[in-house]
Image (cartoon, rainbow, N blue to C red; front, side, top):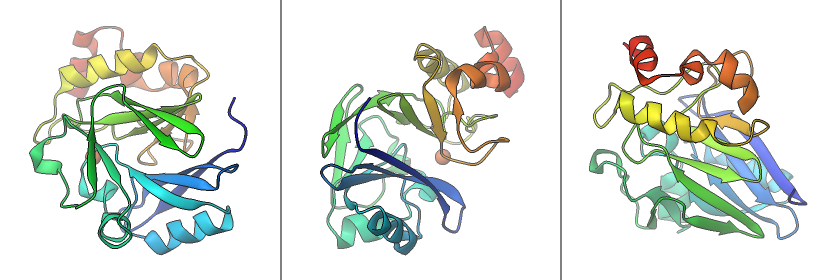
Length: 211
Ligand SMILES: [Fe+2]
């Protein structure tokens, strides 16, 4: 277990999606996962926690997850990380974009954050894994999953991505990109039974459920 790991879930912005402040209290450095457009509130949370945001981690390129880039990338010039696999449809206009491949590691202070490619909602969807914490964006919510009917989406790909996630330890905490469930986060072992999409044992069951 990492000492001084700080995680704060922030339900903010015009789309009310979740942004996350993920910091290392020992170095005072933090990343923001999926910054929404309420950057003053994100910055206030970071200041209150004694953290300085040094980088941005994007789970994918949809606009509700990238609203804060204008401030963090274009104004503060912080690096913004996005999968190499993301559709050109969803690559934000951003001068500090850093592309990565599956299993890349991003350092924030003493934290080492692993990038897991989990396509399906978009081609470049990524979950960020950090010491038993998984930031899932629109790949996996507490009681639902992201849409697969948008351009670049693929239900079979999302099924495979969920099987990859299911291999992680049961006590992994899932931190989703939207508040779709009775709780705002949940342990993987609970979601495996309570999230009907994650509970599907076969691709056929999954495709029947997603329609
Ligand atoms: Fe999305």
